[in-house]
View (cartoon, rainbow, N blue to C red):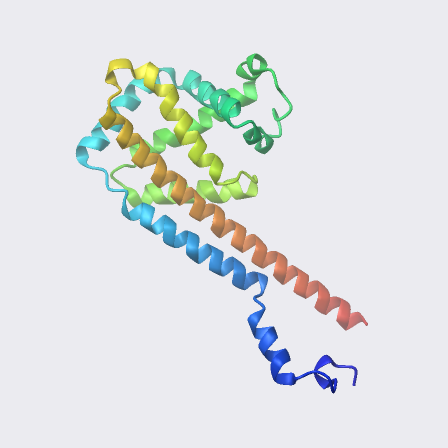
Length: 221
């Protein structure tokens, strides 16, 4: 009949076994997502800020908020200096190599303010973990659509901490640093979950569209 399984040289049981062993793209995505979720859940479980740490974050943010626009720009300039590949995620200034020109970019200033606004909202939700999780999760999903890889989120947290140290001066202590590190680890992990969820959804839609296209073609044959 021309079918592989009907060939006299093919063991049907072996063919079926090989078919079962070969994972589909959906299976691989599910496994990858499950593994990452376990890692992120562990990070989430470790996110337990004491009331003293929350207060340290709020107090230091009050100081930083006074110069929020400049902080946002400096953070991104430092990010691009240490990780030039991050610029590829930004269409408007990915080809600008002059950092002085970047500092004057209205687009960079606007994006810096948006990121600082996200941090401000996060600080305001330290006692509302469900809302904080939703905020970071949805931002991760949107970053998947922008094709901004999760590793960038961790870079940003590191640069933020380095930038604000000289601004806070004597207000910056090891306790303040640990509190901010814990917050950013949680935010990065939650954003990664959002990114992975959106990526999985998009992949599933693509597979569905592909199957529908094949079925439609076969029906026309």
